[in-house]
Image 1 (spheres, rainbow, N blue to C red):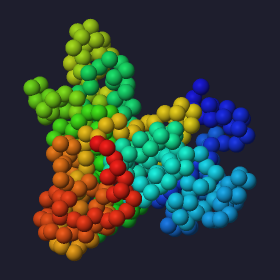
Image 2 (spheres, rainbow, N blue to C red):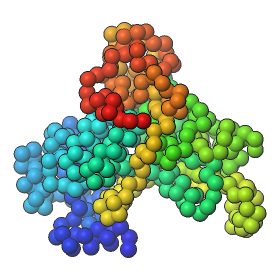
Image 3 (cartoon, rainbow, N blue to C red):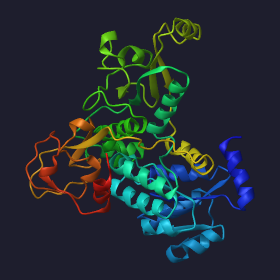
Image 4 (cartoon, one colour):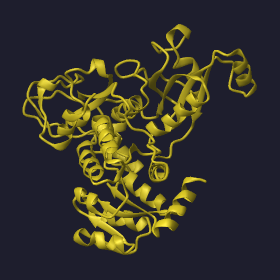
Length: 416
């Protein structure tokens, strides 16, 4: 039985489909809304966004024809209609089963996840930025509340984990797991410098800047590292340029001609985007002969490659995994990697740091042991610089006064 069939069986038993909520009706959120509208067994019934019109659009795309607002949202949902709330924390009190967080803003994601998990709702993160900041705490909280916390399907970390699981389940040694990056790296990129390109691509320029300055890749691979327990090879990872057919010659240990210090690493490569890969190895001559017969090459290193990830279009599968299988696609099981904020320009005392993809900072992935005394990227927004920081340098904890907000409080509670 596939997940949709199982959800339909659940709907028969309960007399209603799974009720889904959404925070953030931007590009990812609207794509998710449109796809949920095509899937039986679940309805997108609630949305919170700073723009009420975008929230309405998301619910309309998902098939809702009648919408109640704020105080009327709960009763509207109970009647089988939709509900829009202006306060993200109000979503936790609505009669829904599961919530997608799709804002991409770490502190917003922390507030949504904390309030919804505390209220006994499953939480699915299209906001990996929050996951790499306080995901371990949120995972612990979800277990206490007996609900699921997970990075959503379709994002590269979960798609990578699926290949990793396949590699492990088939008995291979996992050498390297990661994603392709298709944007050229420019750590000085800002929303202003990318405004024309963002307009052509119909993207939020801040989101595009987070791709181009490398923050998004660092965030995604850090989430993967903490979720599967494989470390980064070094600060910033290797990120070689490689075609798909050469990955199994490049992302392998140096002793065999590659770039890795050791086997069993998380990394990325310029070239094989938008796909994900798992480089595996066999030391069995019988398996090596069979793999060559199966057109996988002469070995002993092989590339398992998925040439696509469908982002928000694929994300609805997480609902069935959580509701039917009580399963998380990816959540931190350890904390061995960190995304550290670096100065995108010279920062002077008194300056306030803006958010990811902005003008102040970009992210670099670090092995946790190398990140001592440095500030996680997801904690920086709203912080005030107290000591000068040179462009390109990591932002240290003694050079900034971080804001007094929930995400910083949760980070203090998180046990690495």
